[in-house]
Length: 248
Ligand code: OAD
Image 1 (cartoon, rainbow, N blue to C red):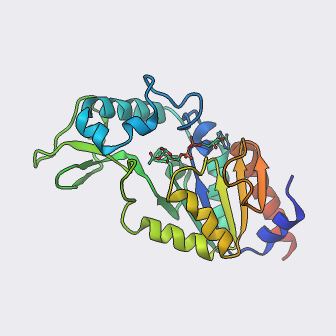
Image 2 (image 1 turned 120 degrees about the vertical axis):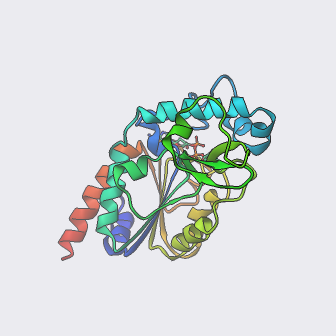
Image 3 (image 1 turned 135 degrees about the vertical axis):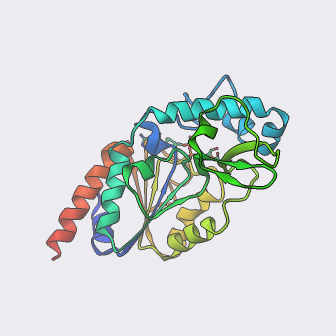
């Protein structure tokens, strides 16, 4: 399954950068954004995941997040998430960059993690920007208000918004200095995350895509592996361990 070039790349790699998208959580039961199960009450995510939608109809958007939190609270990390935890212990430097807000990488035990799009279990005041991690806030179906009177929103990145300060810079730096870049379970359609594999490629990293189907970056990466991340990643980790053990 893994080409000789890929094996050579992981054999000598010191720095790894990984970008994950909704596909890695699909086997846990979290619907992807653009897949068949990605719709909620016939809305496309783009229609709900933006500030204007929240201001125009905060109740609707808050309900969508309540639905997603309820769904996510019932799922567990899958072998793909755990394989990345193991991978972190193999390489001297390992940076996991995720577009997911579902917290499953943290639950699995990943440590050096950059959350590009925030986290669904955190909230934030739209007026004073106070971050709230209190579970009571996210458990309530009704709209919440801050002490300052501002409306409480999920602390996630919506379309048209900037990424959390410093996170993109750290993700771009890790992508540009890595020896191997892995792009897993993302359609690579949403910027700026979609550019990260290209930073890796441009800097000479060996780039690998793992996805159940071809994407816009399939032609650009050095190796595309079509399959489920929950199947492929544990095999990749097994092969990597063997090959690095044999080299002493
Ligand atoms: P998408 O829903 O756009 O893409 C999910 C990708 O995962 C697709 O390319 C699928 O083929 C692939 N996939 C599905 N199951 C898989 C599996 N078991 N193993 C491997 N791959 C699998 O989700 P993202 O690319 O994450 O942003 O979407 C990017 C961003 O768009 C999200 O973070 C979100 C969304 O709007 C914001 O909310 C800002």
